[in-house]
Image 1 (cartoon, rainbow, N blue to C red):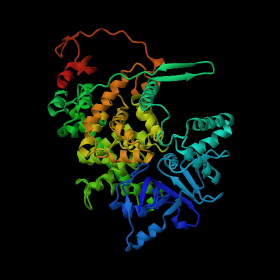
Image 2: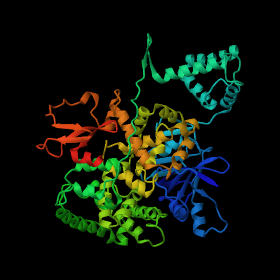
Image 3: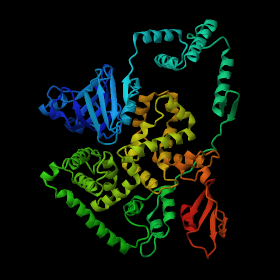
Image 4: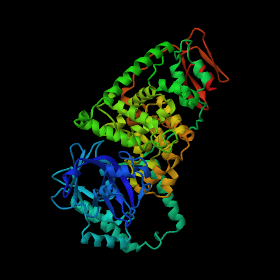
Length: 639
């Protein structure tokens, strides 16, 4: 029985000592696995084995972890294909791993269990090896070599360091993990021999004078005084920062956030409201107003089929019904023209077009594992799966630079489920992909920047939680990778993800509101993560287990409250301002004088000068908050 701690798909086997040539250039999955005896290893599995297992496993895609979900046992009556596929598995025990190296912009990774010999070489087709390396470092202690900063040596504790480790453990003078202490002591001694020696002996001096405190954990002071001291020091540390120089130190009071408002959700945009915001020819007259309404409460299911086409830039807001019919006719012809390009490709052409062939294989594999438990996609020979595959293959022809990346099928499935029509679904999918295109960058630069922004946002909004995650090797926020990659598709039901997506598509109150959704989810789990002192693996498992257990309206309400709490803070850094989409301190434009609007407010109603246009923006109080509302019509609908 094995347990996958981490998996990354789309990994090509380029070289492996002792393997036949036929095994090379095969695509598979690279995993970090925990065996039944507690040992761990790196494991590469060919795709044909994964395909055999796929009926009993959840879908996996690049850099998405499913801790504890995939337990496999071997039966005595395996098929010959299955047995042959399992024989091709490559395993590298972590306790035998000596060195590993990243090259070619971190897309190639080599492993060695013997000095001077690279036994296995893998190529990461989708993205790169950075996140795999980050997870690997949580299971082995590494150090970069001096001659090559891309080569990592696995550090093995020698006998002397093990003895030293036990000695420190018996003294019980370090609250940290003693292995880490020994490693840090040795490392620091080389760089700062004088200070390191004094630091170590100061701890030993405490033992001599005060005795070993391991039995009760306290010195000879009363419990009441000790508790009071602890609380006082903790409170001081939480509210102050210290800046030291050689001559002085300055103690500053840490700024605090204003209270977080509680903002209830509104009602969905109804058919009556939607029709009321269009002119007789079908133009949407109040675009900002529609976005406000959708952000506040989503869209009624009965009109989602129409509204989503506007939110995803398939239908322009200002087009009439007649113009939209002409547009749809042209888009239909364009779609089937692209579809014909790949449908008419011969077997000979395909055999000489490796990139196309690999993408087609990946699409077919993912489609067969997408939402198969939902009735719309369930069963063998399901025609909806064929439509799903056709749309994804046509998107490969539409955007061949990007092609297909794992995770796209998850994005597409709810669109097809709602819209039904193949052409409409394709163009809405194109619009959605335009919004999240950076999620699928080959170098993962877009995802990495979002994770950095999320870490900064969480540190600003919840420094205690951010500090705890950092102490558990989770400060890089990689455990949120799946949330961001497919916009929480795996965390909510189809009904709830439709509500969440349409709110996010409005772009309100800022373009990065999806990061506030992440902060809201983490904030709701803050007490559990901290009180149970979860480590890296437990945090990852806990986050994955939240799937289908989240209340979308509560999360949206909390996220909006966090947004208003942060944007109202007087101490915003430039990094936070950039995330919020507001000018930085040094680049604020000079305000232009504007004529004062002739408006007045009486008991929540807005009176506007008849000479003004209906698009005038006013700021009104809504449940205790100052919110900019576009037009009196929208305010009336909100009320």
